[in-house]
Image 1 (spheres, helix red, strand yellow):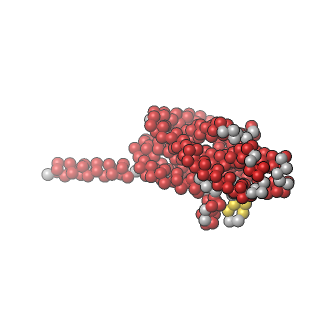
Image 2 (cartoon, one colour):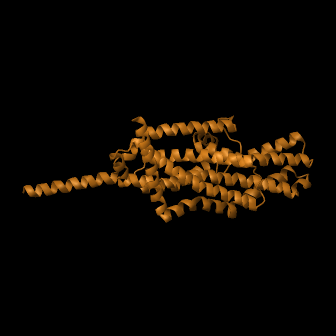
Image 3 (cartoon, one colour):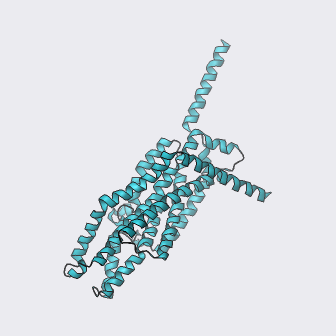
Length: 349
């Protein structure tokens, strides 16, 4: 009996997920706008912000090596430094995309709530946890696929500019961080959308939230540049950790290569090279710390796993919110009742 019920739940999960995907992909404009946002951010960086970022880093290098022209004229070293800057920003775009795309994909979820379709699903023999699981699976598939394309675009760009320094192990680490980011973003946005009743409200949240999130998770600028109290507040956003995880996956090998190259060319001593790489990491915001505590990469991964477990529990606990009657449905019912009362009154007369 239990096995039959589980099989039925699994079948319902797949069928509902397939239905959500069909609704999403049948609207070509929705698919286009979902892809457009991360691509626009990518284009803005490449064509407008990249030169500013590189100039600021190169100015810092000129001050650090003002008496060593050989370092400043080393084209390969400068290419590695450019790779650090590009990897920092592009990894931030990838991480932010998991949040923005997931939030936009929830249009299907909110539309179903607004139209009362979720109530129709629940009125049938469908468990509410199976229903919310179908929205999660649908959102995860769309977000992962879309952001994977964005990630491949960033890697192609690094290769085209001669800044591709990732190893196969780094690529697996990027994929792992990307997977954690997608799961976390999907669970977080679905939980938020449980309490949203109208698509217009979601559109406003997307417009405001996407911009704010870019700063609060460190995608647009190093968190160390924010006020101290804001830095500490960022510790409570799961995207802060997933951004750092993805960012480190993009650049761990590159930092090691820079250190080895400085030593091989006798530009710096062992201690000086290690200190230079550390300053470079801190300067572009690769290391994160909250409440004066440095958060190592392993603790970042552990924190993300804890956030995932918390949001799984919250989504299950508040799953009933997705079948609440929206204001629009309430208004229709009230209007219908008034009409009936009016007709009844006229008949009595």
